[in-house]
Length: 100
Image 1 (cartoon, rainbow, N blue to C red):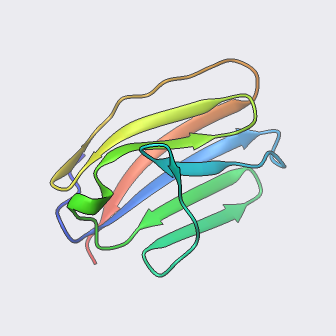
Image 2 (image 1 turned 135 degrees about the vertical axis):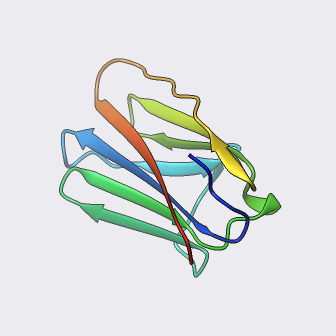
């Protein structure tokens, strides 16, 4: 999948149990809701939107619950998938892009 510089990158995950709290990170730094970063939650589904992706956003994007994590490398011109899974809670991470 390619996320062109300036587009919106979408990261989706599903968690079990659906009440599990998740934290999103870029290079280990927590991501908080802002105009650039949108965090959504609906049942078991969690979404991180990164608007206007650029070099500042490059790095390892990680979503973590208390027991699991899943990660991918984000690059300004594209996304290189690199998933890591640990057992206990269930995380499935999906990647999307959208022109914006």
